[in-house]
Image 1: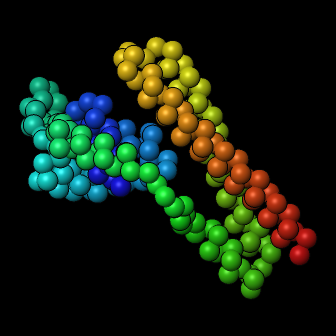
Image 2 (image 1 turned 90 degrees about the horizontal axis):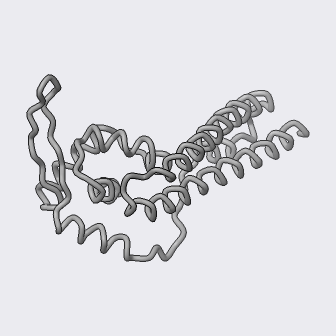
Length: 183
């Protein structure tokens, strides 16, 4: 999946590995995380596969950088991947659910403490998403490239899904806390 994310960002413009990590952390990283080392390893393999090219740029007063550019082969691969419909639900890995599933032998206090911490975390995440929504709405008014107007619609759609997910998670946490309190 990481190679498609990298191709997607490089389809907008050439970027360094550092730029890609920052872009990912502030967008797709909210639903698909990647480590710095994973990004660089994937970029090197993508270059070997002919999906990207790189150019070493000497920095004047800054560190030297390697800038990656998507190739036509990379654009084709991205296009093919985007055109294939997903035909099944994707499994979600959720450690808290596994822990809760096996919590019958735990004390109510330890379960409630964990659920309370999780509620705080998800409240913070929802607040972060709401702030991002405000920023995105402001930025959408003055996007420098009209071609990105359409992209911003889909960026906002993924953000709204994240907000709905967090709200649903918070609702579930509150319900579960009440259930555990009544045991």
